[in-house]
Amino acid sequence: MIPIANPEITDLEKESVMKVMDSGMLASGPRVKEFNDKFAEYVGADYGIATTSGTTALDVAVKATGLEEGDKVITTPFTFIASCNSLLYSGIEPVFVDIDPLTYNIDSYKVLEKLEEDPDIKGIMPVHLFGQPADMDTIMRLARKYDLIVIEDAAQAHGAEFAGEPVGGIGTAGIFSFYPTKNMTTGEGGIVVTSDKEVADNAKLLINHGLTDRYYHEELGFNYRMTDIAAAIGLEQLKKLDDFNKSRRENAMKLTEGISDLNWLVTPKVAEKRSHVFHQYTIRVINGFRDDLVEHLEENGIGYGIHYPRLAYQQPIYKKLGYDSFDCPEAEKASRQVLSLPVHPALSDENINEVIRVLRAFKPGK
Ligand SMILES: *Cc1c(COP(=O)(O)O)cnc(C)c1O
Image 1 (tube, helix red, strand yellow):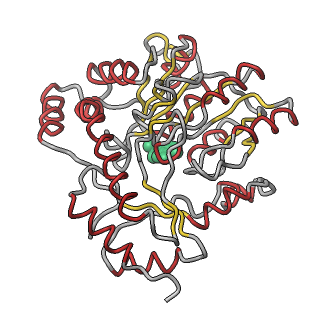
Image 2 (cartoon, rainbow, N blue to C red):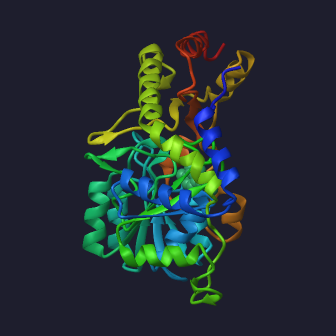
Image 3 (cartoon, helix red, strand yellow):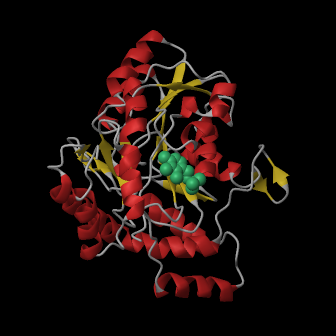
């Protein structure tokens, strides 16, 4: 079985964790501070505030940037549910806009249309899906023109760049996830990054019960603090991130070389000005052959993922809340066609050749 994800933990991470164990400081301490600084620097932001997950980082980013109950925020329905859930946590209304069929990211022209139609929109949350940056040029231009808060969901895009600028550090705030399947891990974990001091100060309060002095709580906060154990893993993983991403890119290139001539699938495209870090290598399976391909992959021991089989507004909880009438035909089509193949750095050349061989042996419609 070739798995769809396989986090690489070596003696380096284990030794760092053992040092934390021996130090007696298991909760948030010096390793978290170091991780905050190093990760923020890596993405070109002034501040990093590590959290317990990508989801809690999103919750903090939404609240720390000053978005409020009743505000409307544009986002994509073709994402992991945490993106838009983070808006609901603060009573904010997600406004779903369709995707660009080539990159699977939010379509910036549709964003413009929506902004012209609805003057009440306060923010936009682009998601750099599968490791490919969204169209940050246009998004930031629109944000300046319409005075919007921009929260980048970069949970899948550690190290990806738009026009040479690392994602996450471009908008008002950005977030990353360090779940084990992501491009780097801390076990569970996340981080908010920003270059706005006020947003950073708010985020620091929010993750720590609004504490400004010993047992003095200025704001309604939470306990979303990362542990030094997690940060110790993250510091080692961060050193390897560029190598991880390099091998993801190389694996993606080999897969594309091996399968792009097959007429029943479409390989991933990298749009202009973007560097793609291939959190996922996602193909489209056309003519309704996806279910047959899934069966074929299962029979042949190739791991796969469907990211994502349902749009956010098609989920029962969103329907229950009344979010069911959005016009996103490209996102709906993508949700019926996409399938992700193994692309992670732990794959050997033999593994990749096996994935290619199994795909080439698939006879659609037979
Ligand atoms: C993984 C992910 C998250 C949530 O991160 P967790 O660490 O799992 O909470 C948010 N948004 C996107 C796009 C993700 O892929």
